[in-house]
Image 1 (cartoon, rainbow, N blue to C red):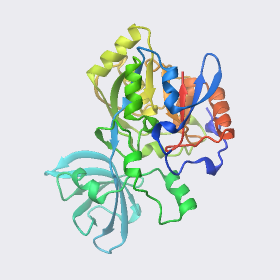
Image 2 (image 1 turned 180 degrees about the vertical axis):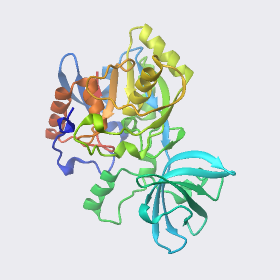
Image 3 (image 1 turned 90 degrees about the vertical axis):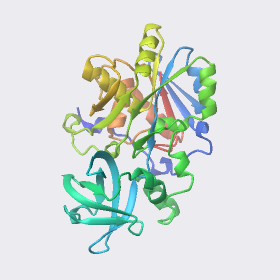
Image 4 (image 1 turned 30 degrees about the horizontal axis):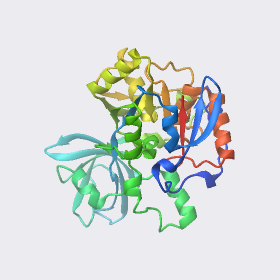
Length: 356
């Protein structure tokens, strides 16, 4: 399958540089797959399309301030780390897989320091293109990140802000709160599960009063979610792998929802990959910790998810391919074209889509 089948034209002016003033004030494009119908709403209207007994599955992963800016101990040259995944500790010290720049200069044995040497790291091993295994001089880097780390906004937001506001206004104070879902509890993501950014506590409470039920999964989003597809054929793309956890209660609620003929509504592509990845790997949905590199493209047979809440995704991306698998490629791209015409806001801080 050709990657260019998932391309579309997007004026850069529609890339959202900042979130909406209020989370649930973002726009909502509703796709009805059976009726081939498109409606334009506000996210606060989503309850109109959810029924009593439906189950919303939320990814409760929390974004960590995973970007660290430091210097090489030998030369004083600037270094940037993006924490990717926590590894097994070594001799009581915190060990991580990191993306680093300039990667070519950071060889095993070299030391890097951050925040006037409050934190130091030693390069252990090469781990892939731009990646290194490192060990820190402390037992818990996470405790320091709120003081010395930065929220790792996606590159397209940074680029858009650079164009609009200049190089000195790339981060805003509100990013700390708004690039995070209101129900985030499990530390570990380097990118937000953005479909959930539109929910407020009040909206969730309204939906529960309406009879909609809530369940959670955890999938820690890695930087691979931004990795471009650089091959011509979809099948040749190497999908990134991410760790997930599904609670027993979530499996119980999903089983009950299915038995009652109600819908499992995934909030975001990460929830989809978690649920469908578990079902595909195990023959059925099971609880516990797992890892998935599932790439969902048209032709995929969904076993768990009945409806999807998602944002608008980059052209030629694996996220757009997943959405096209769920709702038919031509219908989705037609909806994207209409969203462009109607001046919807795109990507992480942009508007939302509900597919029923």
